Amino acid sequence: MIHIQDLHKQFVSAGSGGLLKKAPKRIVHAVQGVSLHAADGQITGLLGANGAGKTTTLRMLAGLFKPDAGTIQVDGLDVLRTPRPALARMGILGDAHGLYPRLTARENIVYYGRLQGMAPEAANTRAEELARLLDMQALLDRRADGFSQGERMKTALARALVHDPANIVLDEPTNGLDVLATRALREALRWLKSPAGGAKCIVVSTHIMQEVELLCDEVVVVSKGRSVATGSVPALLAQAGESRFEDAFVKLAFPEEIAA
Image (cartoon, rainbow, N blue to C red):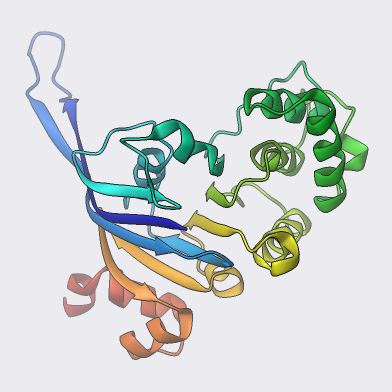
């Protein structure tokens, strides 16, 4: 279970003045009131346009940024107060997969398992299991250098899952994937949320409407750094009074544009 309450984060950015003029600093309010409750055994979507604050929110969840205000809990553990045990409860696939290109897929996965405290034999056995789950047996002993985007995603996802975390966090996981790779990822996530797959708590950040409709049990709509609506896809359609989810999203996320 992942619980985020009223999260805030701002950055100070230098202006764009010329060489002879000192530019004034600018405060960027990246996140200014995001809340999310993701339950076990379901997929929760964090849906918003580019720049809405999704990635910054997930980076705070991953302990990379310290929030200015708000709370983040993973299975009841506070990420700020007890970061190590809280982060150990998560498998995180960020927006940059960051594989070691000189290592094989297996070596990337096993190395991360070792960082998580796993014995070499256990990490290797787990790599074999994940290769079957993600249909990547043919990749396992190939170097990551030269992998396609889909192959990189599968390897990075296996690496995030190697320690069998109860919570899985994915930031824009289908970016750059073809249709077959996207379908394979969906099927893997559906299995992981099922009782057979461990009833994982899964959070997926995306800006793609179709992904949310096909995959998510619960959706948090984020706009301009704020949570503006929460519910299932049917509930959000009813709230917006629309039959198409794209229209519902626009109405919920950008009501001022609809009014204009």
